[in-house]
Amino acid sequence: MPVTSTAHQNRARQAEKERTDPSGAERRPGRTLEAADRGAWSATASFPPQPRNVGRARRLTRTALAAWGASQLTDCAELLVSELVTNALRYGHGAISITLALTDSALQISVADFGRGLPQPREAAEEDPSGRGLAIVSALCEQWTVTTRLTGKTVSCWLELS
Image (cartoon, rainbow, N blue to C red; front, side, top):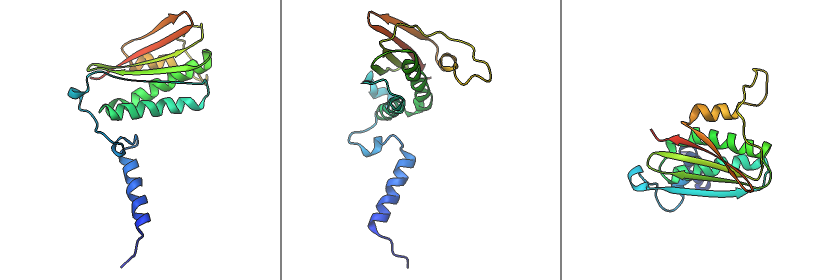
């Protein structure tokens, strides 16, 4: 009969949990919320304008949606967050803030920066390595808007729950 160590069994169980729950919500205290119990929730984070923070913004999105019981939105929401945060890094200035707000009808994703330039959709040629971000946002969302502020702008989009 094979002998396995407790440490090996624990690592195997942990690996299985990570495969079935990549956000880690199951391992945290509390519980995920059913849509009817959720009400309106929000999460906000600000970070320096560094490329590694695109991944951190995606992780925040994945973790928040899992905790709110809205994991079905994760793939689209992570893609939208990636595009908006990347645009803020590329064309904005200063610190970047992301706000996720979930209601009973939609997830609002807002990304703010201190740049003055407004986002402009464009048509990228097939060989262009970039230029498709806002086209992706437009394809996934009913609408997106830009709000100018005295010190920058906020780009928001809404991902419908249905």
